[in-house]
Amino acid sequence: MYDTSSDSKILLDTVQKFMADEIYPHEDRVDKLGYVPDEIGKQIEEKSKEVGLFAANLPEKYGGGGLDYSSMMIVEREYGKTSHALHSWIARPTEILLACNEKQMEEYLYPCVKGDKRELFALTEPDAGSDIMSMKSNAKKEGDDWILNGSKHFISGPCMPDFAIVFAATGEDETPRGKRKRITAFLVDVGIPGFDIQEGTKCISYRGYKNYQLSFNDVRLSADKILGTEGNGLSLSGKWLGMGRIWVGATCCGKAERILDLALDWAAQRKQFGKPIGTFQATGFKLADMKMNLRAADLLVKDAVDRALTGQMMDEDAAIVKIFCSEMLNKVADDTVQIFGGMGLMEEMPIERLWRDSRLERIWDGTSEIQRHIVTRSMLRPLGA
Image (cartoon, rainbow, N blue to C red; front, side, top):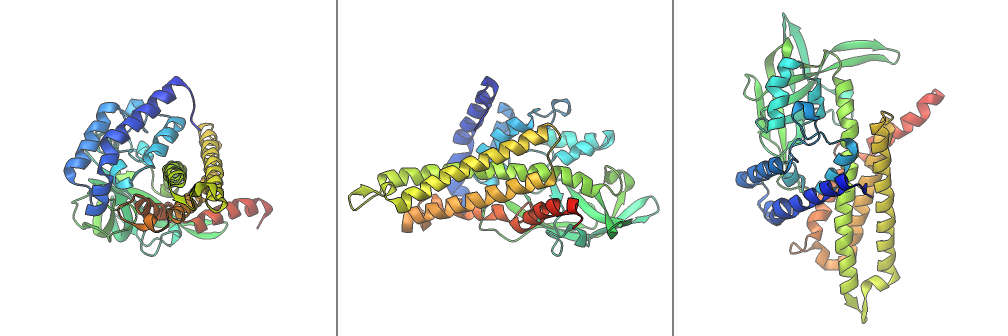
């Protein structure tokens, strides 16, 4: 699966050691508590800075680790073996911040790279999840300022942020397909008048990974809070969402590998009728299918990363990865519960937690249904349909 070069081996060893020392020991406690104690989160953050993993995804010229997509594939795959509640403390600031102008970089990008600030990517709304163009959040021009109103939900992050990258409609454009909302990204500081942020409802997947509800009531923003230019918010978000879906695929592969290892060990050790249960076709064929589908998923991720490195990755490439990898993981997790039998659902075993965590992957960053729509659209549009 991995590049066999010495640099890649060193990176893999570094990430695996960090996970073993700083992440895995806290999994059960965090899952039972339902939150990450501040001292654990801060320790993960500081230790990741020491080994060079913090902000490793951003270019060196901005203070980041400078890892390319091939290297980040290795990193994200290993992170996927545990909970987002823990590995998200190893910040990978969203690459959309690279669109900051010089002044914004000083105020937002550089502090995120150093760990002095945390951001949220605020796109999803109660009535505009998959259907972004149904977005109700809007910003209207008033003199030189913009007045922001609306709400966002299911905006995830490890801890209370310092600012949010908020997407809002700032007008409409005429297109060959009719009127289309013009979406703009704003940098909105927590604490500014009219901006309220609260922790949202609890999720059974990745317990301890927080989601926030944001509301905006006549929030006044100066023009220098626009990220990029007015009206190019969807273009900016598309660049982030595409690779984000590839990283979902990579994390799904990592988690599937961990689950498969647990299933293999159990199938080899657990005996019924005097034989290891893995020797029975009902179990052994499940293991074979897991192995084959994981191999295929890894190859899809690598193919998409190779395309991204050469600037050839399309929306449908990311969608295919997101669908296949998340659904592969769900099948691996469900079959592993079946192999473990009743023990697979007991809290004393890690299987039920990994099974719960796996379920979310088919929903966030675009549901499987939306991803299939993207793939279908890419096939039909060239034919005029």
